[in-house]
Amino acid sequence: MNQYNYQNKHLYLESVAIADIAQQVPTPFYVYSQNTIEDNFKQYQENLTAVDALICFALKANSNQAIIKILADLGAGADVVSVGELRRALKAGIPANKIVYSGVAKTRTDISFALEANILQFNVESTNELALINEVALEQDVKARIAFRINPDVDARTHEKISTGKAENKFGIPITIAPEIYSQAAAMKGIQIQGVDMHIGSQLTQLEPFEQAFELLYNLVSKLLADGHPISYIDLGGGLGVDYEHDKSPPSIADYCNKINTLLADWDGRVIIEPGRSIVAESGLLISSVIYIKQGQTHQFCILDAAMNDLLRPSMYGAHHMIVPVTEKTSQQTYDVVGPVCETGDTFARNYQMATVEEGDLVAFTYTGAYGAVMSSNYNSRLTAPEVLVRNDEFYTIKPRLDYEQLIGLDQTAPWQ
Image 1 (cartoon, one colour):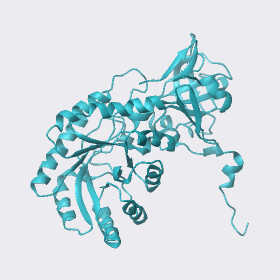
Image 2 (cartoon, helix red, strand yellow; image 1 turned 180 degrees about the vertical axis):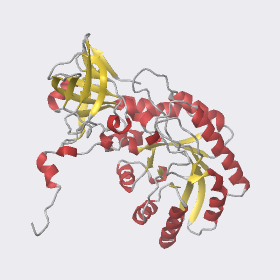
Image 3 (cartoon, one colour; image 1 turned 135 degrees about the vertical axis):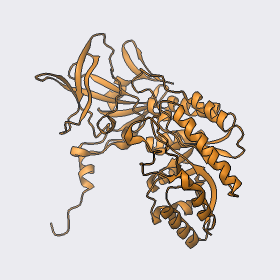
Image 4 (cartoon, rainbow, N blue to C red; image 1 turned 90 degrees about the vertical axis):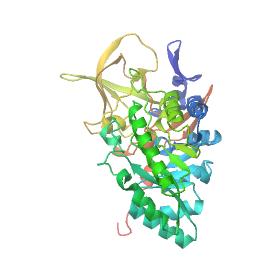
């Protein structure tokens, strides 16, 4: 549910005027709607009616402690891809027995910490990783609960940089050799097989790739059960897309859940799903100020104080976000919308028609609750954008902006300097 709207020509998130936040929090800053996050998560809970589901929020989408706690309080688990994300999930109150650990490069230290925490499951991505997990588990005199991440060689029909389920991608075990790998794992004394996992990509806007992958996975599960492996968890991953430009009709959360209900209605084990973007993306706005309107030789530039270090998706993926004025206007103008970083790639949109703005105006990038602040950096020694949470008519800064002394203080000169 989209919670931003105009009231008397002023942009609000829930019942808070964005301009009021900007008076206290200098731009650029991120702001999130708690009610949107809760509503989206509850759609998964309410629509997964035919399966015993554990909804594990993918922390890579947004790992702010306040955001994780909102979901932990609603009963969410967590999908983590680093030991840092695992620590964040635990600190925010997600129980270890609701955490699955994915990722292709788990180290001995990572595995040891996860075993000590007693997480629900490792999603294993290679035989090398399996051997290391087994070794560490034996050293700790425990059994590591595992699922193999299966690569089904399915085209997710998404951007090449966020496709993860094709044969040429680095992720998972080829589905063709999965039975052999499960047999190897069954012989290891430090391993407890319990599941099968799959994740084919991110920002999927059609149900057909999901359906194709889920059917392949369920057929594999049937074979593994017939071979005597104790499969009790099917992990379907995440990847459901959102409508960034408000001009498409991707499947809804209900559509996605109904597909799972239909395909896995006969499954009597647990189903894990790992949504991230579809829970938090639409909750967020990135608020920025117009610094200059510059007339170039062929293009008119709208230069903002937000940059690629604040919102990387346009530079990295060629992604598009709607850009709307904080004070509603009727006139339109075409701009190249750019930031201040010394890179031509610091461009949010080219030949973009938007509201006519003036220097000093505020604008908002929509649907920035996922893969926004979490991918930010201090490139060009820029201070990262703070994050603000809104609930009804209240707002609170949930991650403050560092000052320059703090940022530069992270560096240390060598003893001989």
